[in-house]
Image 1 (spheres, rainbow, N blue to C red):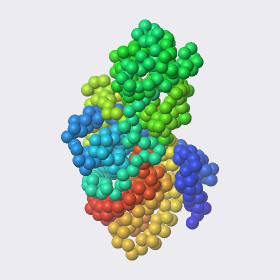
Image 2: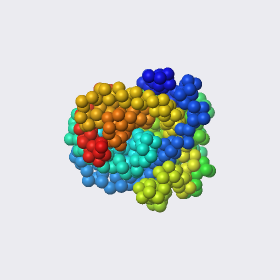
Image 3: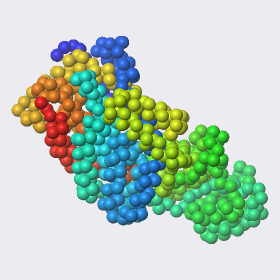
Image 4: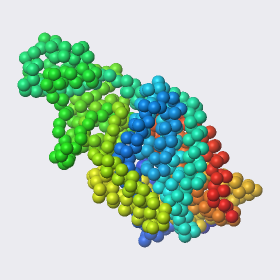
Length: 591
């Protein structure tokens, strides 16, 4: 082993150790590894930043924008609502959820596909009397499987295409992944529909979503407006309007707290904290002509006639809203979103609405434009609870994102333009046609992922240029001595599956793909099946909640424990291995 190879192993080994440790963010680790590789001389100065102009970064960034445009269109929500009344059995509901998420994940970001369908899962859970945990884990696994079907379905497929381009001069095309990917998706969905009972029915320990759905009482803040018929009337008179369905928990007058005694007389500009059910609160506010404190008109930047709506949402455990107040966040001024009400189980809130420090599991009523609310909910880790229809104004805006996506995929499938050009143009079209507001474009792009990819490309290339991949391939060849071709392919697939829970899946491919290709060459096999095996293994982490963000997303709402994932994930992983190896050998012959 040469000095350069030893240094390459040292840099990549240290990088993987820091990834597994998880103390620092993965983009910071990747950039640090790049600088270390440059410092020790295994990455030349003039190639240190080649990754930032690499096709991988362009494709992933553009695909994220296109994915966000399709997800925001609302057309999926509208289509799903047609099926809801006709589906009653748990298995039929699960079939609709898993199949929809799986198919969507082939064309848009899998976590986006999952997020679209989570509110529907809660509706089904409430209707069928089961816990959402029955649906959420199979949906998360379906989203991972669905991403295997197309080149843009998941970042490992994009990365492995680039590796093949470098090694053979020919990249995988958009739909080269379909024969094996669709087979795995079909088998995986069928398995999930019959094995879902392996998932325990749990309630959330951190964010009680099921309980949140049943919440009936909210705390809201209202002001006695000038001209209100209750001015000069007693507080008990106001409460009677709600027919016993609401109470006044606090009164603030000229900045001072006044005891909410039944006989106090109300004055103009009194601020009232009301607690009760939505219907009772609505009666009091409308009949007493009160003004909800947070109910303000949208800013002038909003288009005239923009539709305003209010949604219920649960604050997730990782939300940036946790520990913050609406006043401190300046929700209205900074995000054009009003906080209208808060509900917290088992606790009566007596602070002014804007001063309440929000907690994970709080149910909030937020008001904003139909265009902006979905992005706000996603960016701030809030999960919508109530059934809602979010369309971007017109049918043209609802269908246009699908047309843009179809044009991009069709043009690449026909070989008219390269994938980076097609998807960059599609992302630009999303902006030009105002499918995505300009200020949301950069929110749609996962910056840390792009930086990590750009930094890792030269680092992973150093393993190949120093001959390190050949050394590892030789070691693997010794291990694989005597194994049949299927055994060698299974070895690579298992290695990728074992590594990806601890690394980002794209990082797994960048490290493993060159090794797999060298391994195949050393055994006298063509590399395509081995590269595909790496992509499949990197995209199929069913064993942990930390290996993929889809698994992490459902952990809190589903109330899952770490040990719950292998209960369904281990048999699914075995099924994937048993099906994918012969499918790969059939579609991509080894010789």
